[in-house]
Length: 73
Image (cartoon, rainbow, N blue to C red):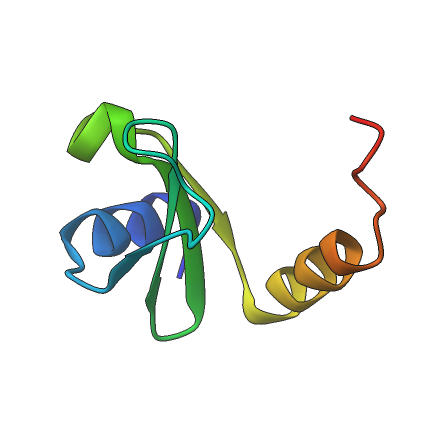
């Protein structure tokens, strides 16, 4: 699935979950379709750009977050 197809599939997906640490209008959502994970900004709603990850990229990203690799950003 290319990025454009993945973004279209994710945009139409009802499988979006809001981050547990999110504030009312300052949050991100994570959604998935088979073989692709997406992250979007909830304050922009359906108009939000979607960052896409394949499963291996997602695992590496989550591992990096848990290991503090992005704490200095």
